[in-house]
Length: 422
Image (cartoon, rainbow, N blue to C red; front, side):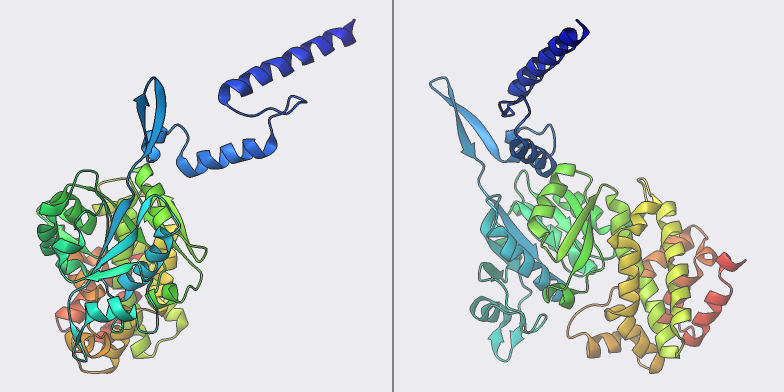
């Protein structure tokens, strides 16, 4: 009798499971188990699209004709890359390839290019005919669907996704030019590493874009030296997206097998990491120029990271968790920038010569801009207002050496007397 009762209960469970699976739209095999491949496919779709999101949220709209539902896909999103330097051109290479493989995006990508003459020819003409940015990313072919446009208002026309990759000191003026051409539903992502000062204190570059254009803005920061990304050498990066759905879109737009992306919601911390690490990299360059070894540079990296965390907790309006500093945008970007990258390179030359930062920038960077010294100036002003200069000796020393004539050899003193050792 017990055996019969158990069998009866099991049969009832199978029936209930089948009815539940049918209600969820999952195919059920004859023995009562959900078809494994269909179940796995459904789970994968939930991960990619986000559980609970409607098809309308993922680009499908429903209409009604004679009582039946008809599917109408949303038009593909037009992309505009605002900037075409070393990093902007590397990102254009990724985006140009990725849009061709997705129905979500328009297959042609506009890239705004600040017009320059190269050997008697316009840079935009060279890019559009030879498909190479011969000045800022020589030796790398750009996809043919990336179109160089010299007028910013023409480049952004019809764009639903704006990718900002320009020196941070130019962003406000460009946004003023872009604003009249922004349409409803446009979103942006900033790859710009820098900060500004506002009336209430710290102002992030994404804040400037958000306020001027009235759009949602995410950020991308990570250990991403542009030439290595263009060479398709494996690396990681971090997207900070307060809007989860936007994070999914940007990951689809930018991820490749060799450019792997983690999306986090702590966008402000991600962005601040990208700006502050350039100050630390200048300090690392000073150490190299003064002839100190790897032990000293390791100390610069550690103390610099401590100041980054403390500064973020002091000035960020939102949550700041230590785990974000373990992402690519944090410690990984800090390490790679302190061993490679333009800030370290120019700072080393500064320590070895009597030339100014401005002179070295012009000589060594082929028209690119240095971010570390400028960011140190913005940080120093914020620290002065709170009377906290002495609590951030590494940040402060970089500013004083670059702009106030402090001897570069005194940089080691700020390390020796750092509050972390007191």
